[in-house]
Image (cartoon, rainbow, N blue to C red; front, side, top):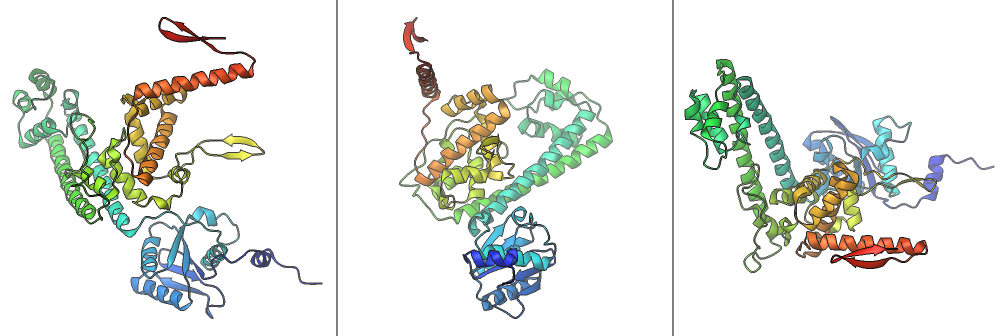
Length: 461
């Protein structure tokens, strides 16, 4: 009687080897454990430190073992140096979601973890996470740093607002933005020692709708010395972050200038931008971002309703410039976490909620979808129809899903976007409703007959 095979031996004998030259790495904060096939070295599991010299020694050892592809877990940010060094040495590196490999019980040591990763990767059972090329990663780092700077600046704006409110200076009641031209001029004057409400109100910009009398009344407050000191410090910190954002914008412009041209802007000039308001958003870069994006992509994504140049930049910094990384539009919206879920058990749909995904590109699509609530376009009509049916949160997700599909179509084809208009959308929606009613009536044995009344078509059974 032959010896009974263990489940692992049975797995090894039945599954084909997809990646015979595979290695697994268990990433740690101070040490990384690496496993290679047992026939490649007398010691198939080795430990390497986190210093750069040891990471290069790890790459040399993997070369000696004739390794071609490596799988590692995405542990914090500790995987980034290992990933970059191995990728620069020519290895195919797959970054694996830790949740997909930690659900197996019994493997609680670093040695067993790296061996388990190596075994799963050998049989092709691991899917790597998406990571754009190195040039896009550099742009993404600048964009994420810029977002962090904007969030930090917002904190100091809130503290300035708090100090003004504690002094009963109701500046925000008479102007919409205290960091605008009028607001900053008045705050600078308060910090400099001016207390006369009339003189402070005279600093208002000509475009401010509130009268000088109302502004002066709002600026009559209790200017306590300690609160003015807090206001001055928060103002200085806000100005510091604004300077940092300007410096970051210069780096972003230089980074974009190094991208190769996909279209000649001189021979194929960029069209006029859509009117999106009286002024640019306060956190928008001060250089010609729209032309840069058109030059490196060959598509003017800002023609899509809800998309500004900064929104497009955030999306491209996350998804890259190569649409082939997503084989179909379904792969793209699924990666974004914007498509309906499909949890089916026993032939019954248990849930169709979207997956909880933390994705900056998906957040940019959602922010763009929120701006469609008052848009006089086909996308605006779609958003309002979804909102009336499902409420605002689900309508935002549905509109973001549609925006992502439109983005992917332009991204892959290079075509221009043309808004059919809200009238065409409403007409198509009306026709779809009528066709559905006709089908339901026919299924019940009735016919739907149009009856013109007062110039409009009415339908009767």
